Image 1 (cartoon, rainbow, N blue to C red):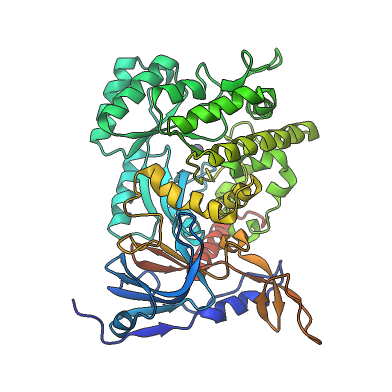
Image 2 (image 1 turned 90 degrees about the horizontal axis):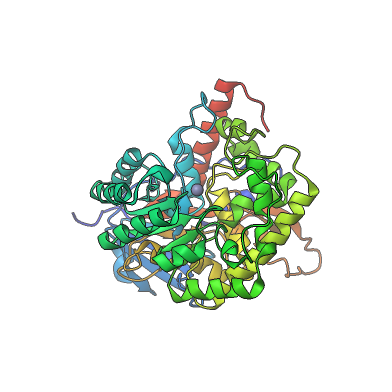
Length: 525
Ligand SMILES: [Zn+2]
C-alpha cells in the first residue's frame, strides 16, 4: 500500500485543553466536537509532531521530537521528521504535550455485570481503561474462553480494547490433589493461558502448580490471602510475582496472626477489618528480610494500593466526583454495603478500622519503597470493579499512591510502563518509547511528572493565567488574575499504532451510563 495522498493535520492540540480549562470542578464534562477522523482508524504512517517524551525506563524526559509510526511500530524518533511528514497518512500535533508509553495494568478483571440483573456492556470497561492510558491489561481471573476470544479480537483490532493477557486462576482450589493440579496446569497451558494466578492453596498444591508452570515456561502470580502459606513459601517455590499486600507481612510475624478468638475468615468485615492489623504485627527486621528475599529471587510485586483505599478513607471513596457521570448502575448497586457482594463490606465501618488501615498503608508503603530501592520489580494494577474503584480511574489513582509511597513520578511511570512490560515478559517490544518497539503511546495534555493527575480520565485541576494552563508556582504580571480550571487528561491513547481519541471514548462512556440509568431508573449519585 502506498502512502496516502492526503496527509491531514489534527488541530486538537490546544482546543481540547482550553475547552477543559474553563470548566469549574463540578461543571459538566466538555462535549467534544465530532470524533476526529483519525479515531480508531489504522494508518500506515503516523507522525506525532513536536512531543516531549517520557521514555518509560526512568531516563529523564527529552524533546521536542517527532515520533514516526509505521505499521504499528515506532520507526523514528528525532527532529525533524521531514521524510516521515511528507509521506505521512496522519499527523498528531503534540506541541505542549508529553508522550509516554501506554500503561500496563498488571491486575484487572473484565466484568459484564456487577449487580445481577443489570448488564454492564463490556465496552464501558474497555473505554475507561483506554481513556486512562491502559494499552495492556493482564486479567488475573475471569471467564477464560471469553477473555481468550477478546484477546484475539483485540490483537486483530476488530474491537476497541487494550491488549489482553489472560492469567486464569488455578481452579482446583484446596480440593485438588497435586497430581490433579499438575494436569490442570498442562491443560490450561495447551488452551493458551499466558500465565497463572494462584489463590487459596495449601503448600503442596502451591508446589505442584509452580513446578509445573515453571516446566512449561508459564509466569505465575499469587494472591496469597491469609493462609497456611505466606510469601516465604511462594518465594522459595519460585512464584514470578505477588499481588496486593497479603502474605508478605505474614512471613514476618512472630508466630501466627494475632487475631481475636471470634475471628471468622469467611466474614468479609472480619477479613478486611483484621487484615489491616497484619503489617503492624510484623517484626520490622523480619519484614526487611522477606523484602530482601523477594529481591534476591526476582519476585515482582503488584501492590494494588488503590483497591484498599476505601478501607482507610471511606467518605472519599464513596464520593468520587466522577461517579456522577461514569458510575454504571450495575456497579452502583454492587458497591452498596452488603455482605453478599465481594468487597462491599462497609457495614458500620469504624474510625478504628480506618486508622488501622492508615497505619497498615504506612508500613506497607514503606516496605514497597524499600523493595523498590533494593531493585525489586514493582508494577501498577488497579483490581477495579470492587470497593468503590472504577475502571481507569483506579489505575490513575494507583499511580498517585505509588508517589505517596515515596517514589519519584518518573519512577512511578516506570512502574506503570516498563516494569509492567518486564513482569509480563513483553520487554522486547513494550514499555518504552523506543524505535522498533510497538507503538503503544499516550499523548498527554500536560506533564505527568509535574502532576500525575493529568493521567486521570477526569483530568486535573489546573491554574490558568489568561486562559492558559500554567504551573501553580507561576505568578502572572500586573492585572493577570490566576483562575482555577480543569485541564490535563490523555488526548490520544495509541495502541499498536492505532490512535483512540480519549474525549470521544469518554463521551461514548457517559452515553452508555446515561442509557443504562434511564433503563434501570436509578438515581444519579
Ligand atoms: Zn483481583
